[in-house]
Amino acid sequence: MGYFQFLFAKEHRMEILRITTVGIASILFWLHILPLSVLLVAIAFGVYSLIKTAVLELVREKKIGTELFISIAVIVGVLGKEYLAAAIVLMIILIAEYIASVNTEKTRASIQDLIGTIPTTITVYRNNKEITVKLESVRVGDIILARTGERLPVDGIIIKGTATINQAPITGESTPQEKKKDDTVYAGTIITTGAINIKVTKLVQDTVFARIIKLVEDAEQNKAPIEKLTDKVATYLIPIAFLFVIGIYWYTRDVKMVIAALIFMSPAELGLATPLVTISAVARAAKEGILIKGGLYLEELAKVDTFVFDKTGTLTTGMPNIQTVTSYDQNYTQNDVLSFAASADRRSSHPIAKSIVAYAAQKKIRLVEPTRFTVVHGRGARATVNGKNVLVGNKKFLTENNIEVSQNATRTTIFVAVNKRVIGAITINDTIRPEAKKAIEALRKSGVKHFVMLTGDNEESAQTVARAIGITEWKANLLPEEKIDYIKKLQKHGRIVAMVGDGINDAPALAQASIGLAMGAIGTQAAMEAADVVLVNDNLLKIARAKAISKRSYRTIKENVFVGVGVVHVIGITLVLLRIIGPVEAAAIHLVPDVAVLLNSVKLLRVNIQ
Ligand code: ADP
Ligand code: MG
Image 1 (cartoon, rainbow, N blue to C red):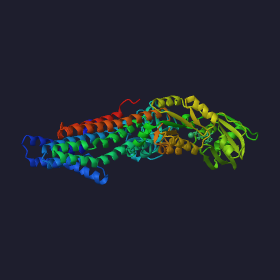
Image 2: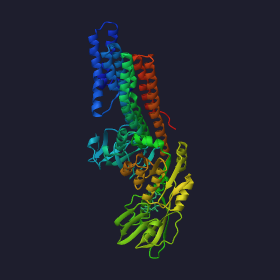
Image 3: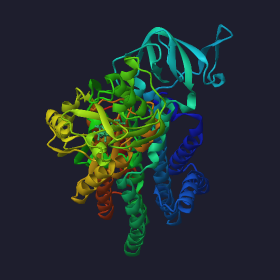
Image 4: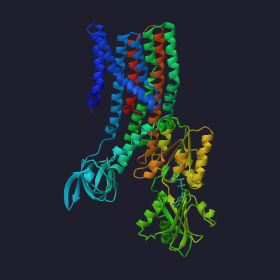
């Protein structure tokens, strides 16, 4: 929607009417055409909405806002017989409030614009016929048809056809992805070429896209500390401000000066300075596939000086390669080793487990459904397979369970034990993500000083990965609890720690850190919930982007608060006391930070952030 449509939208008619009424009445009164009584009626009409808002805020939120200050200023003006000054001040403030509310609405609406909207109709197969229906009538399990150029309205799995799909609206990645049968496709993404039949798995409100929109909308509720601080400062300042104004009146008996002082005393932009930045920054990040769950995390991320990374699945790819399968026991073949491992790990969501299962499937090995399956985070899995007690995991896991392992593990090695004896091992090529080194460098450039890698894997693998990407501090063989302890230790030394993990088995560490970032969270609800910042796809460079965006927004907040509000108000009050400016000039000058703060915040939606 264009700016002017917003400016003159229906819901704003009343506000425009108030502004013009007060404005015209002031001019006519000044020209001696209008009697005082009519001007007073116009003022009453204009100030009514301000008083209403002021009282509501005071009663409901215990908050003293601009409206209260301006209402009092206008009442003081009328009582002090400075009718014209009161009317003009009122008009200017009404204009300021109006511009502010329009801009806030426009910013909110631009979130939708940025991410886009999904279509409301859809083509489905019903009784062997293609029909176009309203989105509401589609059910999970329906087969829908999507062709080139269309935007998908639901999440689903391709059952026929191939397509290249632009996933930018939800992942921020610009290169279209090739998708074929059995691949998952997401609402909000666009088919650039091809035609596919999709089986619906998630309806409108449950899609990843819908969750992204919801996260962005809710982001406003998690206030940044600086915002709470400005709220608090405003609360303290107010009684002082009133005493100050009473003092001015006591000494000068100058009503005009009192009105002018009241205008500069109001904490107007403080209230606006941060939320708008939050909305803009969160929307901006969402467009790049980075979901920041609120102003709180924006500020924390801006201040972070230490980044802690999980290794497996975070710094290394989510789908590691199986390198070798070895049997140590004559009674078992290689395939038996793989079969036990894959069966035991069948229900685990760990990236290594998924790789083993996928590898077994590729080798056409029949898997057994495990009974009594338990995951031991940071170690492996324990299961009963065909009545046998099976352990799959790292060396530590087996030795802790009193199973002797004489073999040495250099690279990432998964040992398989059956009934308390090691029968074989699987080595894993834990491939480092190609962008890992670049991502660390980018973070270093944006001011992060310390990098730590914490892993449950062995020392050798840890060292290889850390060295390859330029991390000098690492710790191997850690259990999830020990990762938490390590983060706590860093925090005790005054570090502000961000933890990057996969969000599934790292959830506790993500929670312990000042800010938790989950990677590649598309489709995994748990990860999306556990983290404060969610990277929709699993590109490590996005972490540096998130840091850059948050740093830039925090700077904007500080500019708004200290320069926009602080400086203008201090100078304003000084000028008022020196009798250089009166109430009308004060109201006009007051518009400057109002507008400046708005522009400065909304700018975040567009500027190039490095
Ligand atoms: P990281 O801290 O690097 O992400 P994890 O704590 O997830 O690693 O796992 C540490 C080690 O424990 C892995 O390198 C692997 O040897 C072993 N492990 C963990 N979970 C499993 C599993 N489900 N199957 C086999 N091995 C596992
Ligand atoms: Mg992990």
